[in-house]
Image (cartoon, rainbow, N blue to C red; front, side, top):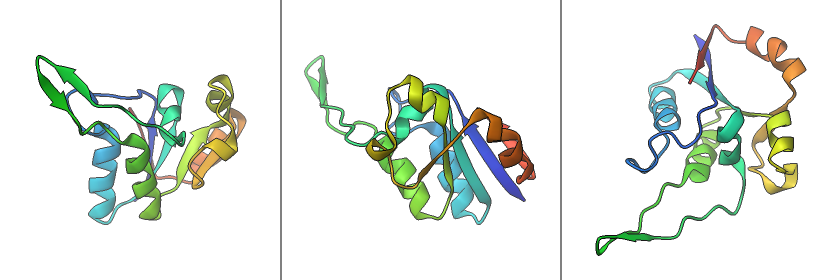
Length: 126
């Protein structure tokens, strides 16, 4: 079964965890042999922006040095041959230029989504 994961809720649980839960589960499912790709929309579009860095934060004398690296997780997913689609209009509205994004990210216009979706057996929207 070929699955498209549409992720539009960006930074879900990244305060509690060191990854985006849906990107993480996509890694796990792909690692188990599933043919699964992702489409990033809305706030999740920022996942492909290069140069992201989260500085350590100190709360109550405790320093958290291991911030989430969502860009790295998406890049790793692309390294596992998953296709990474990004809503082009959401990139435009956030001022993201193609050259400032993960090279494997493929912008796709809203008008082209029906054609993309027809190529999948299941579409999961998060």
